[in-house]
Image (tube, rainbow, N blue to C red; front, side, top):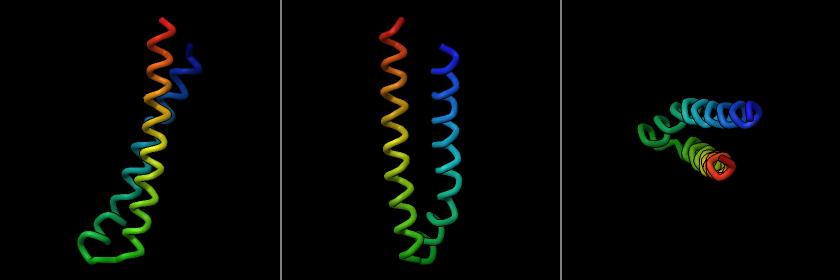
Length: 66
C-alpha cells in the first residue's frame, strides 16, 4: 500500500513540476505570440492529460481495493 502512495505522490509531483516548467512557455506564447513556445505548451498539456488520467486510474483502483 505504501508503494501506491509513493507512486501517486510522485505522479502528482510530476504534474505540478510539469505545469510549473510550462509557465514560461505559456507566457511567451500568450504574451509574445511565440509559436514555438505554443507548440511546447501543447506538448506539455498532452503529457499533463496522460499523467492526470494515470493518477485517476490509480486513485480509483485504490478506492475499489478497500
